[in-house]
Amino acid sequence: MADGRKIVGLMHVLAATAGAGAAFACLFASPAAAQILDPPGWRTTVTSRPPAPRLRPSLPDDGSVSEEDARAFDSGAFGPNETARAPQPVGVDGVVEDAGGLRPTLADDEAADGEGEEGQPRRVRIPQDGDPVSVIEEAAVQDGIIDLNGPSEVSEMAGEITEFDLRSPEDIRAFAGEPAGFDPLLLQANEQNPVFSPSNFQGFLLDPYPPIGTKIGSFLLFTTLEANYDYNSNLFASPNALGDSSLEVRPAARLASNWSRHAVELRASGDLSFHDRYPSEDDRAYVVEGLGRLDINSRSNLQGFLAREYAQESRSAINAESAGTRPNITVDRARAAYNQRFNRLTMQLRGNIVDTSYSTNVFDDQTQSNSDRDYTLYEQAVRPMWEFSPYLFAFADISFNQRDYKIPTFSDGILRSSTGERYRFGVSFGDVSHVLRGTISLGYAHQEIDNHLLPAVDGLLIDADLAWAVTPLTVLSFTATSDVAETTTAYSPGVMERNYGLEARHSFTRYLIGTAGAGYMTRNFINTDYNEEQFTAAVGTEYYANSWSVLFARYQHIDFQSSQPESSYTAEIVQAGVRLRH
Image (tube, rainbow, N blue to C red; front, side, top):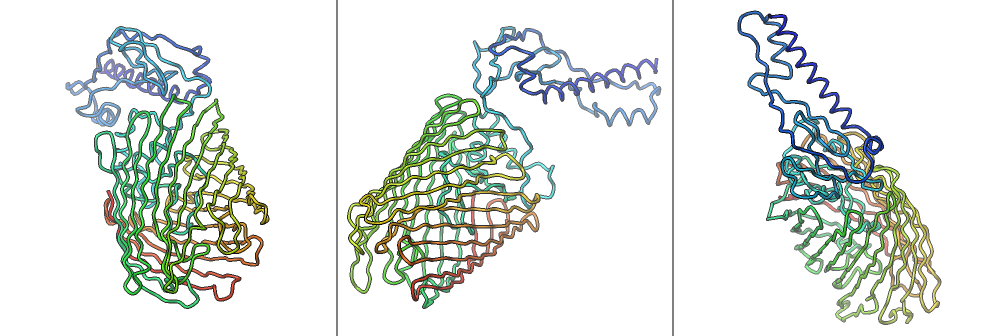
C-alpha cells in the first residue's frame, strides 16, 4: 500500500512537470508557428467547461513514509499549507489553457462579441502581419542596485499602472514616471548643453528611486524642487572675469494621463536665481508645455505640442553682449504630427512653428532695440522609418524650413529671411535593449538668404543621442547636435554650430552615483573670419538619501576661445544643492 501511494505521488509530480514544460514551449512559440496552427482571421472558442478542482495530495500518517521522503515532498511543488496549482500553458494566439478548458485573452487591437459569459463563444482576433512586435524582457538593471532579483516598489507600481495598457513601451515608461526619453513627435535632437543638462532621451535608469508620482484620478502628478548654491568665477563671460555667487531655485511639475488610449501631458518649470553682487544676472525664467496624442486606431495617431518659454539671454549665446542688461527672450512653439504604420514601415508627417522675440536691453545708459533679431520659423518634414527588429531601425528625416524676419538687420541693413533644407539618414537602436539605446544620424544642411545678397550656408550634420550600458553599474552617453544658427554679425548669413558631449555615470554604491563629462562646441560664422570654440570638462556626484531627496555637487571648467580680439575667456562653476521630488 505504501508503494502504491509513492507511485501515485510520483505521477502527480510528473504530470505537473509535463504541464510546466508545455507552458514553457507554448510561451516561446513564434508568431509564425501560431499562424500555421490556426488560419488568420477570427476563431471561436468555447468556455463552457467548469474549471477542474485543484487538489493537494497528502502524506499518510501511518509511519510508512520515511523522514527523507517527507522532507523531499515538503521542499517540492506542494509546500506546507499550500494548495496545488495546476499548470496553465499558454497556447497560440494569446489563449491560456488550464485544466478546465480554454480562456481567450484580449490582444492589442482585438474586438470581442458580447460579454463573453460562461458557456458563450467568444471571438478573439489573431495578430496579423504588421502588428507591433511585443518585446517582453526583464526590467532594465538600475545603476547602484546590486541585488538584481529583489522586488522594487517602483516596478510594482509600474505593473499596477500598465496591467491592461495598450501603449508602446516608451509611452509606458514615460507615463509610469521613469526618466526614459519620451518625444511624442520623434523630432531630431534639440539644441542642448551636453554636459550635466537633461535631454529628451536619458537612455537607462540611473536612479535607485525613480519617482512614482501621486495618483490623481486617471492622472499621475510628478513634482520636483531643486535648490542649490552656485558660484561662477566669470559671470559675464568676459576676458575681465568678475565672479559672483547666487541661490538658484528650480521648481517643476508634470501631470501625465494614465489612459489605455490617447494621452495628455502638461509640464511646467521655473528657474529663479538671486545673485549677491550683480542682480542684473538674476534669472526669471519659466516653461509651460502641453502635449497630446489622439489614437485613431492601432496603426495611426495624431500628436500635438504647444509651449511657451520665457528666459533671459545667456552671456555665452551667439551675438550676446557681455555688458549691459540681458534682453528677455520669448519663444512660442506649436507642433503637430501624423503617424501611420504600414507593416514594418512607419511614416510621420509633421509641421512646426516657432516664434522668437527679443525685448530691449540697456547698454551704456541707452536703450538698445533687438527687434531685428525677431523671426518666425516654419518647418515641414517627413520621416520614414523601417523596423528590422525592436532593437534596430533605419530612418530618414527630410525637412524644409522658412525663416521670416520682419525688419533688416541693423548691422548691415540686409533682411535675413531665408529658406532651407535638412536631410538626415541614420539608425535607431530603440529603447528596449539592456546594452545600447538611442539614435545616430548623418546629414546635410542648406540655408539660403531669400534676396541672395549673402552666400548660402552648407554643412555636414551629425546628430546623436546614445546610451551604452558598459556594465550594470556604468553608463556611457554620447550626444551630438548640429544646425545652422541665426546671427546679426555683419555680412554673415548664419552660423554653423556643432556640439558634442561625452558623459560617464557610475554607481559607487546603491545610493552614490558619480558623473564625469566633457563637451566640445564649434561655431563657424559663414562669410567672415570669425570662429569660436569651447571646451567643457565637468565632474559631479549625487547621493540619493531616500526616495524623495537627492544631494548633489558639481564642478565645471569652461575654456572659450574666439578669433575676435579680447573675446576669449575661462570660467569655473561650482554647484551644491538638494533636489526634492515625488
